[in-house]
Amino acid sequence: MTFLNPRIRVRPARLEEKQAVVDIFYSAFGNDVMNRLMFPAGPTPSGKEKFGDRTFAELEPGKGELMVLVAEYFSPETHPTFDPDTYPDDGSGELVAFAKWIFQKDPRPEEEWKADEFVYTVETSGEGCDLDVMNAFLGDINRKQRDSARGEPAAYLHILACRPDRQRIGAGSALVKFGIDLADSLNLPCRLEASPVGYSVYKRLGFKDVDVQDLNVTERWGVKRGADEYWGHNNALELAGPVPEGAQRTVIMRRPPKA
Image 1 (cartoon, rainbow, N blue to C red):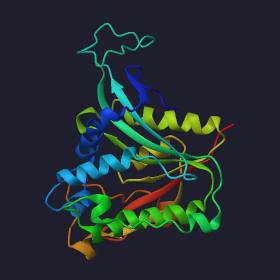
Image 2: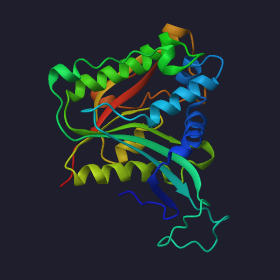
Image 3: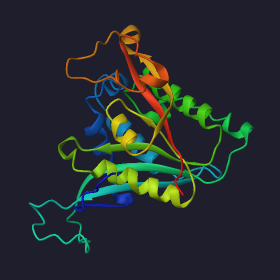
């Protein structure tokens, strides 16, 4: 059972919060090995701008309904007499996490979903990114999800990010739970790609392993795992076995709807 923090409120993101959402993402994943490889000189202004635009971009007809959510935290320091039944709507909540969900309510024909291509370019991703790394990592993950889902109606969690200084207060779980509850009400399964660190959160929320990407970071780019880094060596072992030496494991996961 997941116990949610009553000081966390989940609500739809506003367009004027785009920059805050971008900042949360890069603070959450800035030190991740793949982000370091994709942005070898660090995130660029154009890269951040493109990410924000992609996150809030309207979807093409037939490709689902977009829902960008934020988690607000009303801390004891700023709201000592907080009442969870009456969240203040005065902008005093602290934005600590966000999620991007896409709800695909109808099945997609095979000829349509098979035509989806996931190729990253400077036009889509901005200046300063290593497109070879981006396509080997994100492009391949997206294709694995596509081939696993085969156009099934589902709620897709595309992004979940939480500020490092506000982790472990339940913001990420609240954002996932919000989407899960909505998916259950629509009788939709949920799908996502779990990072090494996020995997355990999704397992607790009922997601099952479907497929894995074992990307050999050391062999391809010469980067070795740091002593304080976790590349997923304990994840999805029953499905895929041990993670190869020098590889990072990302797990494709699915949660069936609950009646």
